Length: 180
Length: 87
Image 1 (cartoon, one colour):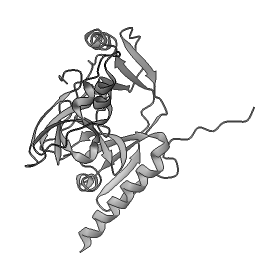
Image 2: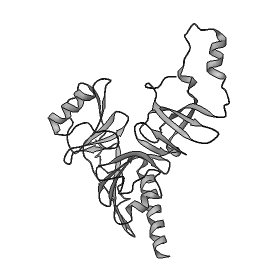
Image 3: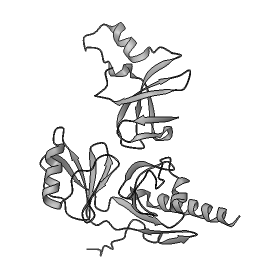
Image 4: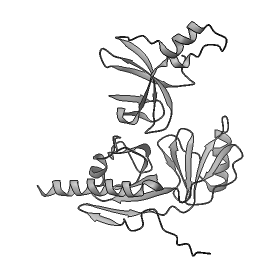
């Protein structure tokens, strides 16, 4: 059998360091989508709490620091940073390797994302642990603030090249503007 | 224009896909008269004023919502999730 070589979604594209931002790839390891069935929200949240110590997140929020639960749409969340327990009251789908995840950080990270994203990501309203499902240019993404000037941006793996291209163009634009 | 998604909060219009009049939620009975079905499928009022419309938060949470807005003043009065909304 051919020897298969594992590559990450952004292999060969990252890291980048442009002006006031650094962009590098994050490997979340095992990623599991959890979507509670109708009426199963509480049972699912309780089961997650008992097994990995995080409850099912409210919209626009994440829970946990080790294993994390990241809200990612209507009645849906991603469990990252650990295995997902059996959840009889929810649809559970393996999303490992399905997402391209990049971390963008630095003094200008907010300014770079402001060029691309129509949601308000300012620190005064979008705090650490907050997340949004929104668009980066025309592409659906999830964005989570993970630090005072650091964000995680998730897009579907097939769009990794577009994600990096758009972030790079915006970062170059912000850097060029700073020189004027 | 910004629309108040009941799940995500107030968001830019770019994140939403427009469907049309919320009349589409009021599906006639299967054995209803042909004229009733014709109205349901094809005939829409072209209102100047307050309208109720279906929007899909395609670039966000994925919910279908009913938005009440005024086509004359461009005021957005509110939104509620389909399923929780009355047609």
